[in-house]
Amino acid sequence: MDISKVISDIKNNQLSNDEIINCLDVPNKFVISNAIIAILKQGIEDSKAIEKLTRIASYRSKEHEFIDSITIGHLATAALLMIRDLGRESYDKLYSTYSDFDKEKMEYAIEILTDLVHTG
Image 1 (cartoon, helix red, strand yellow):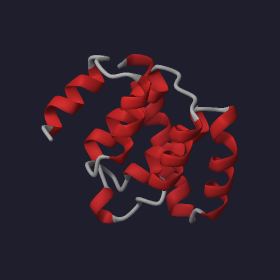
Image 2 (cartoon, rainbow, N blue to C red):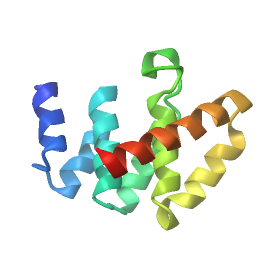
Image 3 (cartoon, rainbow, N blue to C red):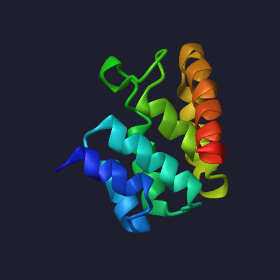
């Protein structure tokens, strides 16, 4: 799989909603993060996406880190909140289990995603 092509296809709206959701299964944090941004930009509200984002929310270890201790798991949790109705229940359950450190990083992840979705 050519990771750079997949990311390019996501960014250039070359994938269907189902293909974007399936990118959440690619074991690459850059593909997953771009898929999360596309899901939010395109307003995809799908139970399969919620399930996958909920699974990804547990990816909060050093290997899943981007910058300043923000992980792909923090981005996935932030996305659940931003999806609103469909993702809110999963977000609430996850957020209640987060440490203060993870809550702080998750709040930062919300800011990052909000900026990317509305300006990028």
